[in-house]
Image (cartoon, rainbow over all chains, first blue to last red; front, side, top):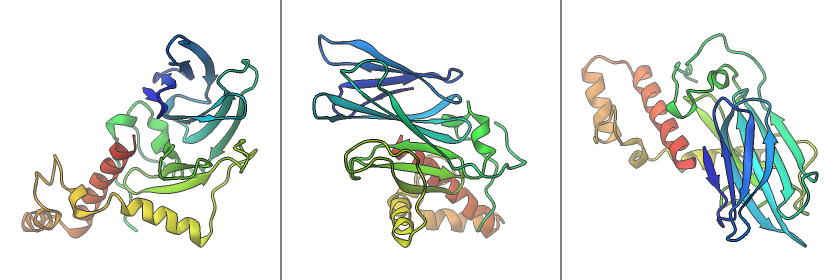
Length: 101
Length: 137
């Protein structure tokens, strides 16, 4: 799956069967892989947003995984690779006995 | 409340585990109409997903250390209004069971074929779920 930020600056890509989300900078002349982010499971939904920060753009990525959890990652587009902050939410509470695809 | 039928949406067929948990997050989306500190979360079952606004960042724009759903009346109204956006009769029409008929006509046809109201309601809810998922993602 591919998801562009609304302003077209960022692209997030992920594939089913893989746990990783790649985030690319799509600004002309600066195209590059910004981050590779690992999820707890296979990604099922992605959404990415780019907002202007004090000194650089801030990327916020939300990813859902096949375990039913949601993770949010935030990092500076222009910063180093170690400035990723994350937060997650797991709404799963009980297991259903039914259902496989 | 109707029991959720066992269905798989093609978009999520590669993740069977997500239908195993009653409270699983099905999807999330940064919505333009919402504040930049909130995102729209779709969770629950595929047949009756719940739309909910989730605050994930503080006023300074930084991520909250922990995320949690709100259980206030205001939060409930947000979820209801989000769901209402996609449950109009217009959105319930489309390819598949309804075949271009209005929802009311489709229900009459199904009743005449002997289907009970619960089955009809479940099918319509599934269709609404499809519309919600496609509209969001």
